[in-house]
Length: 322
Image 1 (cartoon, helix red, strand yellow):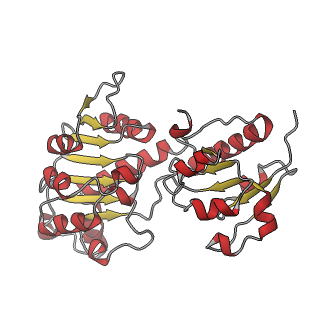
Image 2: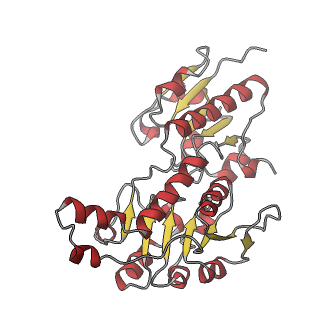
């Protein structure tokens, strides 16, 4: 059955491969400079049936008002925190994402951040590059514990959290997790509260899906429980961690170190954070591998094709499955 021609709006600049994968029978609009509402013509806006976006892009009532024919929102990637789900439901708009497409890539970076933070990789690199490779210089470096036998707590045991757990297990670490509910099929210890998990753990991996219910959930009390040798790794969203408390605890030595790929106000990162030597920072690149990019694009294309053919989707967000 041929697809009905539709107008598809790209909220941001996406790879050429994604545009090329859409049936040429459809019209593609965008990307436009932000705010999108100021650049999209009224007639074009009224024709849009599909919006391709990313989780952090604000897709709320003002934009939805501009798109009265919108039927489908496709988020490239697993996140969709910028979408007003209640409003989309009220208007009968389906929302999809690509929940497992970049899970392996993000889990890889989570382990890279952990290893770099734990083994003083940045400090060691500086010692070597600046010619200070002498016994006295190396002796100044903190002597870390290895990962074998360490207790790694994972906050959020979804697709990414499960892959982090599998990789951590390969390092002979002990693993436990906290999430909405225990998963009996997993061989890891479940903690009913995040505080309990942090008190147990040496390392806290933040892999939970971000939304308003967990904003700032990793607070000073949680991070303090990790202790002066504890490590926090965040590859979820910056909103989940109280960034001000994180900086204070790192500076005071109440938290040992951190590996961060996400920040509260990206791309702005506090100078107070970048000045702390025991922190490893990357610019939200967790899902940026060639394989992950292709898989995420394929998920978007599959959802668009299915929806415009028979009204179904392949990967609806959990709230749309209820």
